[in-house]
Length: 265
Image 1 (cartoon, helix red, strand yellow):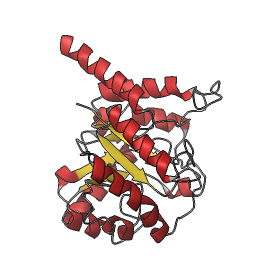
Image 2 (tube, one colour):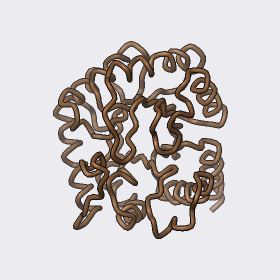
Image 3 (cartoon, helix red, strand yellow):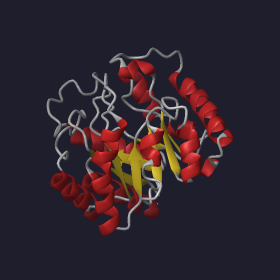
Image 4 (tube, rainbow, N blue to C red):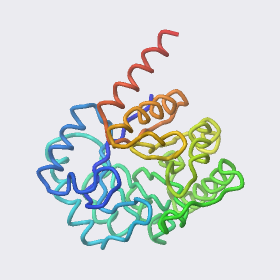
């Protein structure tokens, strides 16, 4: 069954919700809301990964994340994911009951990350994010599905060599990360193909204008909800393991309706 990862961006410049939950009270309320709406995992990040993003100091990330992690652990029993490219940030939570590290660089930004994840013994979410994304550009692929498949085969092998078990790995094709609209659509239509590379797949298409052709009439973030609904539905029907989302309630309803319909077939 597809599980829902609720996103909490503790940033000032994230594309979808930068600044909305940067203060601690707002962050706590949003966490509580997502849990009550049915989130299976809470993903916390203190560094934006929007197109052309800039690095955030590791100590700032740690100090931003710590009080929210403490709040969750003190009040709820729900898996926590730390969204960071830094092994220092990851290891800062060694004693904080963290179940996942979510690294959009797949361990390539920080040469110590794979060893850190191995030591933590937690799950590891790896995203395909070409360097062009950080430069605010779009990468040109000859065959995006084949290239991403080869990318993750190499990353999984590297993780295994570092002592990370295959069952601990989750791959995310990186919808909207340095990719053209056409290539994003190809990826959303190729989840089953990617599952042949690795069975645990996360789709993070939430609130992204990943196709100018499809979204040319969309003007506001509220307008994106219909697009979200469609991608959540198709990803669930393609048996994605996780959906990483901003709107937990909408996604939960979508997943439950699909699961109920499939049980009646």
